[in-house]
Image 1 (cartoon, rainbow, N blue to C red):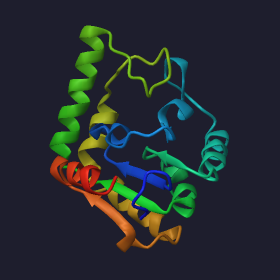
Image 2 (spheres, one colour):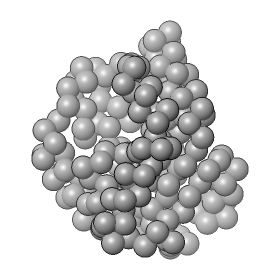
Image 3 (cartoon, rainbow, N blue to C red):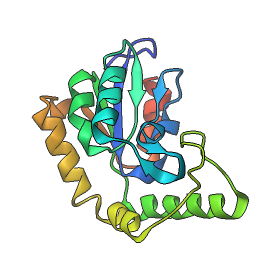
Image 4 (cartoon, rainbow, N blue to C red):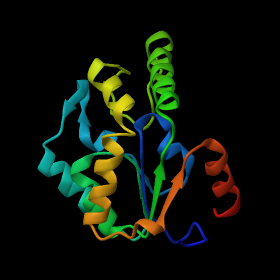
Length: 171
């Protein structure tokens, strides 16, 4: 991995509710959610979404977050570093509920989300977060391997302390 912020093509993945993109601030952040979700939670056409992400990943410098399975391989092929947020599921679920309540009570709209997409939480989403360590994680790592990205080059963060150390020491 490059030691300077000037040179990076990073792929950030992990259970959704950990604030992946907020972890590493730069001018070249690309949030996947607004590329995928249209107003009022309308899904984008999956092929168009995949093409948009592939085009962005061909850029000189980028940091892209998200677990959208259809683009993991595309991004892994272009990345020089993958940062995998491997946090405990209870923390991910806690943050999802906290974010939902903040949106519901305070009307907070995330800056990395499409307008007209108020915070929401569904049973399907709760199940996805809860089972991510056993299902989603395995699928994501398989797709990264299939893309030819060496697993030993993946940086795993299992807690905030590891993330903070990385931010202080490397970036």
